[in-house]
Length: 217
Image: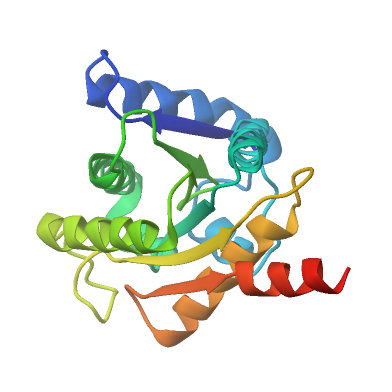
């Protein structure tokens, strides 16, 4: 799957970078990503995500950074709630503008220069946060949610009445090589958040189970 990243605090104007990134995605969608429309987006719900090279590289680099320094690694997986319905209600042009606005809101809420918002699929985002404690990662998720409330983009097909984000957070203490199940834990946390309603965040801390396994080994 094609992905892209919008990093915080780059010299090039934000909107120029976002538009270029979104434009780079479109040709690849024709071959590797379901068509950008209500039916294709609906079909993708519940499917196991296929990570693009950019996201895989970011995850591996973040994992190796945290493992080498014996610090925590946090991961946020974010999805726009009922984006297929938004696309149907407002059309492609407004859907593109929604994605641009959401990308900006997420990026501006990130706490550090160099933190990146990576696009995954039609309406999802991945944020890899090495050397970030669980409490700070939760606070970052809260800032993103606050930014979305301030944005207050109307969504007439949502019970919330505006565009909201569901978020899954996973925290681990990496050891050894990168483990794909770390991403899967964050994706499962996202699904649990979505089952609770719109605009929810669900977290999972993998560290206690890791510590028990290490003690037992």
